[in-house]
Length: 591
View: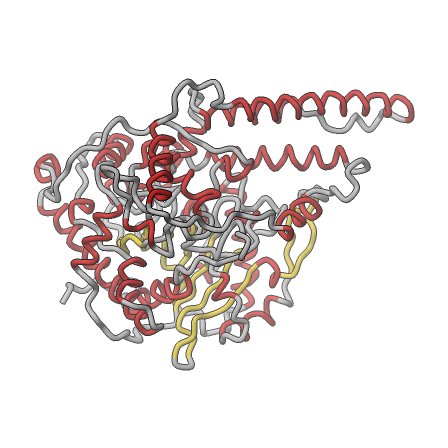
């Protein structure tokens, strides 16, 4: 999920929580009094599933040649206290979420990292389990503006067994896709809209992957959640109806990345209301895996849409005014000289509107007499890195391929005068859809969804979270800043992710956040569900930032260096866990 700055070149900053509280690993008395052994049992099961997943991930990493240091930086070990946040019955979901957020504030990424160092995953061999498993990946917010698809490294292997079987089938199916440049639906081959591959092991497809790939200008990665649900329902029905005779799908899970979690959850709810006979393939869908998803909302949209005087909220207000003021083409009933005069008037008005927009955006924060607490922390971090002679990541470049796509595929700028009003309409629509999509990621809207959805209990949910390094403590930099996965040498760190991390920190996400979503908001809490007794598998915290867990990079540096985080192995580990611990079977007690 991009920040508003990431989407329209505006950095969001808010207000850091006033203090970090001290804490211990002992669960609060309020929790023990309210939940007793039930909470302990739930936390124990969370630790069992996390430990099992850590061991599977570590086994696959070691098999690939990763060192123990690589493994310790790729996946951490959650402190026991974080599995037992203070919640109370009868106080409402919002109050309980606030309690969870507050409880997570004093905890740091370094705690989880250091605990992982002192408690390395045990060596184990992979069990074949029941397979294969098919993961349908729902993409994140604004992902159509990134040059790669999630898990690009896996998708690139078109010699994989699942790709060989499915690509010919997808090439025979078509579906409509919206193109904002043309302002209409166009037909495309399904092989262009859904990419497939598999992680193969010992001559067998171990994990199948189907990635729903929003194309640039389709607006499928922004806009309303329900619009995405309807599109993906249509496409998946076409595909899975055609593959009913293919026995290689196995159990099906949705894998939501970032905002894709929100869409995937809505998809499960919506499809559960459809007649079973109409969608027989859906009976094979067992649940959803959340990868860095804002299950209960994100602090950045909360701040951006709050209407307060923070910089991010001011940015949204400016955008809304711009959308309202920019004018489109004159009415079609005007002809000749009358049309030309009205068009000239509108172009002049739009030029003034664009000028005011640029001035207002440039002016945000300029009149502030003092830096925000996050800006101070970030400046401290940069200063300390320079003192230690820590080299900067190679500067970002104007990625010609990306900008060419935006200028000529998204907007018709090869003929800017002739297509002037078409471009205005397209740009206005993009911003409108972006703000609509941002609004659906707020805490208020996500809690409303959980209150009203009554998602059927039989859907199994799994959650995997991530974090960047914490801020400086007592003038000391986080050791995680040296990690190749989330440190200052990693792609996107300087251009977007570190500012996003501190923006999230200021907005209340705490130090445990991946630059867009906090660990507390990225995992499932049964206390916040309107349905009880659901099976949840907590898979833990990985050492990845928001882009790195899914993409090589979002913005290229001059060397186009990909993030080395082992995304393909992460995907294989998720699938291996689902094979070994399939749907309907209880999680075994840890040996």
